[in-house]
Structure formats: C-alpha cells, structure tokens
Length: 430
View 1 (cartoon, one colour):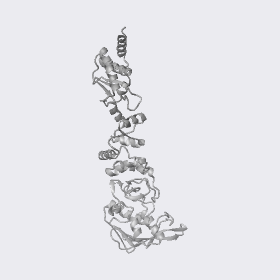
View 2 (cartoon, rainbow, N blue to C red):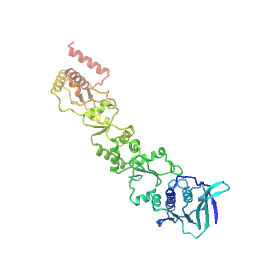
View 3 (cartoon, rainbow, N blue to C red):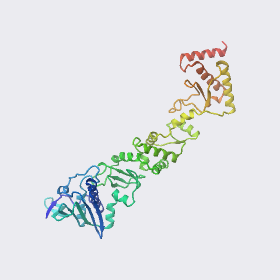
C-alpha cells in the first residue's frame, strides 16, 4: 500500500455535508457517461450506496488538486468534486472506497509533520477491480436521495421536474448549470437551465446572477408553451416582482415559433383591443375613449412586444385618424352644409369630401394635428370633426382644402398663397 498526501485541510468547504459529497459522486458518474458514452449503475440498500460506471477509470493524476479535464458542458466545473467528497466522508468518519484501474482508494484525515496540521490522506492499494470506476460508501437513504435531487436526469425520471421548453422547467426559483442544480432561491416563475463555466464559484455557494441573467433571458424568449407564456403575461399586470417581470425576455432571441405563441398568449390574456402605450397621455386618453385597452409597461417589455408585432398606440392613432364619421350632430351637419355651399359657389363643389374622427399628422406627437387635409394621390378631402364645432371654422377649413384640391398647390407654396389672395379679393368684390 502507498499513501498520497493531498495537502487539503479538513476545514476546506467546512459547510459541506454528506449530501453535497454524495452529489459530487453522482456528478462524476454522470459526466463520465456523457463524455465516454458508458453505462452507469446506482444502488442503495441497507445503509450503503453504490455508484458504478464503465468508463476508462481514474488515473492517479486525477487525484491531484487543480487537475481538471472537465469540458464546458460537464456538470463538474473545476475537477475537485471527487476529492472534496472524499474529504467530507473522511471528516464525517464515514466509510468510502473507490475501486478503479486495479487500485482501491480510501481517504482518512491524518496529521502531517511537513504541513504541521491535519490533511486529507489517500491510501492506495492494489486490488482486483471491475471495469470503469466503482464507489461504495455508507449513507442514509435520505442522504442518497438528497444527493440525486441535484440532477435533472433523476428529477425528470421521478416526475418532480418537467420542462416548459428546452432550457426552462416548471419548478420556480431554480437555476441549473450543465444539468446540476446550483441555486434554488430565485424569485421567478420557472427554473432555468444554462451551460458553461461562468456564474458559479468552486463549491457552488455563490451564484453570479449578472453572468447567468443574459442566458436566462434568451431561454425565456424561446418558450413555446402557451400556458407558461400566459402566466408571464398575467404577472405583468398584478404588480408582481418576479424575475421574469423585472428582466423581460431578450427581445431579439425569439424564434418564429415562439413569436407566434407569445403574440397569441398576449392577445388571449389581455384582449384583442389592447395596444401598447405611447409616451403621450393625450394619445392614450383618446384611444381609451375610442374603446382601446391601453397597456402601460416598463420600457424593456414595450420593446419586446413591439418586436413581436403587438399593436401600438401609434398604430391605433393612425386608424382613429382615418376613421370616417358617418353620423354627425344636427349642428355639425348644418355647419358642414353651409361650408360646402359657399365653397361650391366660389370654387366648385368639393370632391371626395369626408369627415374623420381626427387628423393626426404625427402619431408620435399629439400636438401635430390638423383640421383638414387634401390627399393628392387620392384627391380626397378629410375634415376633422372638431372643425365643425362652429360655422366659421367649418367654412374656413372646407374652402381652404377645396382650394388645394382645385389648384393642386400645396401649403407653404407661393402658388397657393397667390391663389388664396385672389380668392379673398374675389370674396370681397374688389
């Protein structure tokens, strides 16, 4: 037998229990299965756990601190999990033995004169071993089950975890990195599964949400489960402080399929008459008056829904601006008739004249309105209903637009100004 001194203090990761140690044992077997395509076996009975794989087995160098051959997609990030697991078992006085490549490895805590303190020591002796790696250890059934609970394969197999989409699961608050649960306290509606090495420290006691957040937002955008999306939409309007509401999905990460699902979920939840708010209260109030449900959301969410093609207040304002009024009040009709009669006497009868609800020249600026317009391409005259509030305003607008229509000259041109002056002279009888 030979002895390998690791130099690892028994106080390292002193907060770890057998639960975390067993987690690392499962993790190594799952990584071996993923990397080498080998088979794995897990068994617990009568206070003893057994984890075995048919991979290439461990070499002595794998027991050195700082040596890692983990891939970015591996559950283990730093290659220390097995060594720390051995430390915890030795510290707790629980038996554990690894058999691999003709060797049996057992840990113990011993005083080392060179270090002047207790360290983890590995006893290695030659034995007959099965193919791959076999680990047997003492533990309670609760500790065994708790160790398995960290891995998506086991959770999905026992039905305690279901996927909403490829990288989003149904259990709220969980963050998974490479298939291993690393965080359970996120104030969220769902659980998120990311890959890579960023975002967690060596013993998984700290999660850097700033590094993981961008990945989670991308995954949220790709959710295609309509009921899950409806759940997000509903929380937008109930004052929720959930992560999904505060962060919003990445607006440019949607797929064609998820765009359709999110769009449909929004309409079914909020209603077909919903529009995204503009930055102007005047526009929003006018739309509400016309029967629209104006939705006010944080800027990030407005960007998302615009990207998904949801109707905006600007779009609705354009529709309102071109909405033809088919029934006027008696006073409005009288003022319009008077204006048309006078215009007909001096300029000929106005062609294609219609009264519209309002004329918004620029939906982004409620101050840019008009009481009348002449559309050159369609030769149509639009009169804003507000212009018919009194006879003087009605006459002015109808004659002004009829003059545009008859002469073909636009506003702010010398030709139109000359035509207007000639009309004034004619009306005065000079």
